[in-house]
Image (cartoon, rainbow, N blue to C red; front, side):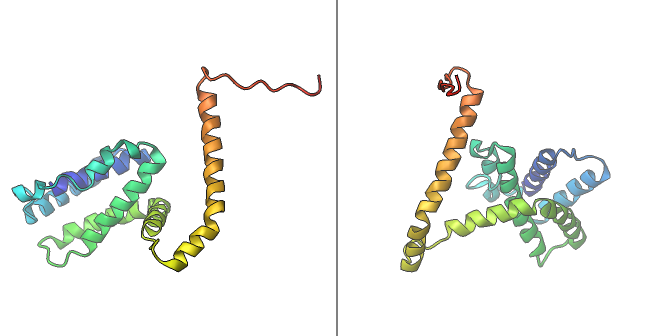
Length: 176
């Protein structure tokens, strides 16, 4: 199961970047993941309990845009990198090192998306019951709503351009 998830992640990352995995690197990666799968006994029934960890998010329609998927994939890459770098007792340290090297390359290429994901996490963790945070949030409220309004106007303009059934508003020409 683990190797399937890692393989799925690798394929999703590769295709989103435009690179198609092939050759000995991909085959060796598949073999390294297979060894990890055997070591972690991922064929046991308890592994499937509760459903998939990452695939459910990748299949979710909320993450359909390429730039959004990059944020999601960057976070997943980071989690796999954390998992593999923190494995202390493994029978296959060479396999783990090889996978970490591949993930490091992807982690570097997805670093901007990872920063975006960390920003989202940081905002989600804000303690809104803290009085000081509340005061700061209220101070910034109008500025944030201005940004929301700008985005809504942009979105409406884009939808009007792409939807010919919506008539454009007639603007009289003041010059005649």
